[in-house]
Structures are given as structure tokens and as C-alpha cells.
Image 1: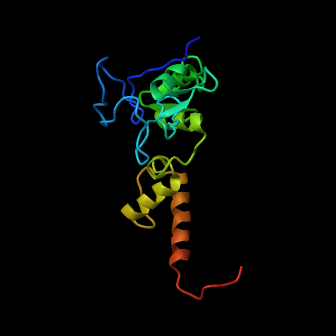
Image 2: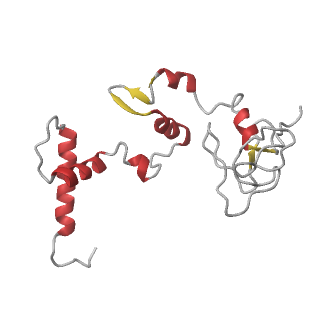
Length: 178
């Protein structure tokens, strides 16, 4: 069985050429087939979120010992899925996912399921972290706000943050033991 190849795929950004006669990527300017520069931001797989290696390729899932570009890698996911995306889609409500009584951004939950990474960076964490929400509420409304529609979890998180803030800003002797 022949190894899948796509000669007209940029090994830096993953853009596929629209014309057979193309020689350079219109997105990043690299010649097709050339290895990306060492400092370049490399392509991520839209299915499994893996970033290509320094040569702009990933190990083939179908052909042991071969390396494929990002387009061929993404195509291989048809035969080697990362999870049951069909079932996951049944839980989708527009751009969110409903899990029991909770809801969260669909793409974020899928990324967590695929990669197993819970802390996906500050911006993603801020979308659903009670402590960050509490800090935002304290900054906006003060330490003991009277919030219409307040929730017990938000109140408890604000209390915890207020206690932490009080302890952090307390002036006194610093213990050097322990």
C-alpha cells in the first residue's frame, strides 16, 4: 500500500496548495516541501491538536516508520479517530455542550477530552473558573456586594478570595520557619 503524501502542503503552516503549479505557500511564503525555520510557529492538527515536529511532519498512524504532513495526518483520522465525536455532537447545543445541568464551550470541552489537558491557558481557564469569576465580581462590585440573582457558589468563592486577599495584604512579621 503506498504511503499517503501531499507534496503541495506547506510544512510550516499546513496550508494546502490550490494549484498544482504552485511552488510557494501563499500564507507564510515557504516553498512547498522545505522544512520550516527553527523559530516558526508550526501547524496544529484540527482533530487531535498535536503540533507538527520541527520538520513539519508527524508520525503516520497508518504506516509505521513514515512521517506525513499535517494534511495527510488529519486525513488519517478518518481511519484512526481520537474519540467518539459523533456521540459528543449529540450533547452539543449551538457552540456549547450540555453535560447534566452544566454547560461549557464545546470546543474547549472537546480539547480537554482529546488532550487530557485541563489547564489550557489563562484565557480558557477564565471562561469557567469560579475563583476568577469571584475576583472579577469583587473588582466590579466590592467585597460584600448585594448581587441580584447571586448564587451560593459565587458567594462562597468571593468569601474565599476575600479571606485570601486579607491574609495576603496583612502587614506583620514574616515567619522564616517551615
